[in-house]
Length: 343
Image (tube, rainbow, N blue to C red; front, side, top):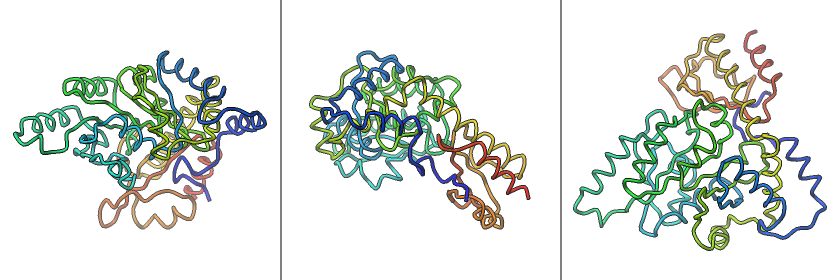
């Protein structure tokens, strides 16, 4: 069976595992106060062009989103996002469990659009009863989106401008950041950092066993962050495990190479399914997530060859499916898939 279900269905990139083994016998301080974590922070600051950044290593993506949004928001504030956003759909109400409402706005190809955000905010602040509603305090987006689409640099700048106009924090979920950066034609890590109040660099879906790196680009993280992170159950006592992995991922550009490899193989899948099989794309994704409209009559044969995710029904006779490549996807797996489906 060939596996294209997700980008976190394997262990860890070989260099990451090797670095964990190489450093395994060294004893260090706990809670991120170790030389590996500090070295990883230095690498990330350099890659992001943020010499003053505060960087924290957390256990996983859902914990990161819930923790950081709780840190950014006042108790009476909520977070704005598009309706397909991960925090709105696939995190079991984790953000709302912290006491902050998730306020969803209709998406356009998986993205929160600047004009829609501005119109919502104009209507909110024009309402005489606004003080009785959940006040917006932050905007949440993902890069790339849940549908594998990307914000352009101009779109990010426009969202930043709206946030500045209404004094909102802009937070970016980067669970798949390496794939988004690899596929983007105009957004770099330093540009993303310059436009955000906080973002995280995904590890779990980008070659690490676990862990995410949260970045406050301007060094203005809320006070007592370790206490805040621990209160949310997101602080690893053995935080060096994440620090060691990010040290490996940001050595010699490995993080960016991982993204480039996965995106290249995803585009090969796209070429085969669209031109070889005649399946229509469900959405135009340049990243490692590829969505195709498949006749229901073909699904069983497809399942016998590969693991993938049923995304949603399209009509009575067709289903949208998702194929995902990752750091672990090999050339020969893509070649074998195309060979088997060509028989």
